[in-house]
Amino acid sequence: MLLFSRLSGDNADLGMGEARALCDARTGTSSVVEYNPPALVIECGGDVNLGALGGFILESGQLVWRGSAEEFDAREMEVPVMDGPVKADAEGFGQEHNSRIARDLGELIVETGMAVDVRKPRSVLRAYRVGDRVYVAAVRPVRAKWKSRDIRSRPFRHPSMLTPRFARALVNLSRPRVGGILLDPFSGTGGVLLEAQEVGCLPLGVDLDWRMARGALRNIGWAGSTGGIVRGDSRALPVNRSDCVASDLPYGRMSSSMGSTTDELLASLVEELPGILGPGGYAALMVRERVPGVRAGGVDLVETYLHRVHDALTRKIFVYRVTGS
Image (cartoon, rainbow, N blue to C red):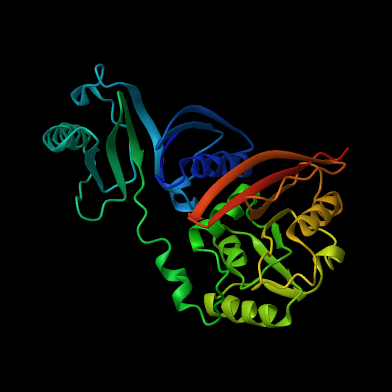
């Protein structure tokens, strides 16, 4: 099935990576058909609500039409059956043309007999122009998906906390499956664990700092999560098996690493991955930009993403896949 996604403007590459990973995890297949940031068309093995699940994916839905702006005519669209009520919308054509195109699409919706609600629609037939390309998709609106997990409202906080959408992106890149165990070997305040719970995983955290472990438990309880925290050392993990791994490795003076550098912690963890994950299992590991990727037997480095947090900090995400060889 062809899915359209509108990606976040501050890191479209990361959103594209999430879309691929989510289709892989949920349907077993993904193939990027057209990448025209912030627009993405991806072949997915089934209908996955990428907008609801993605950290850097703003909205998504079934692709209805794509082509050049010159070829586009809203009056000739074939409108699919959508989960109603429905409304029509258009973006990127200029204010006057946006209104005209939305009106034309709205007339098509009325002709099909679908219920219309312009205030609280369950689906939106949206025409979206990027440069000289136009995409029409039946997207599902996503409303305030981060509000309930705002880091400012959590009972335990720390300066190193990830924003919920960045933690969600890290989780998604590890290809989690619904009902599977996601391990965070450096769980900190539990932000990654909370996002793992939201996408249907069983989260398990490990942290060397007992204060962090206790604080993460407070956050997990506050969020109503079923996850668990174990106090332990990532260099000798007290966990035998997991379905995927996602973690933000510690660095800097505010993080406890018992004298090990981030480079050393990354190398140690990558070497452990074949014993933690089965063949085909993924790990998404985040470090500072200066940290190089490492290699280990039975593990391939398959993807790398950068995200600029602010002028003094750019984070890098390595995605590893266990080959089983």
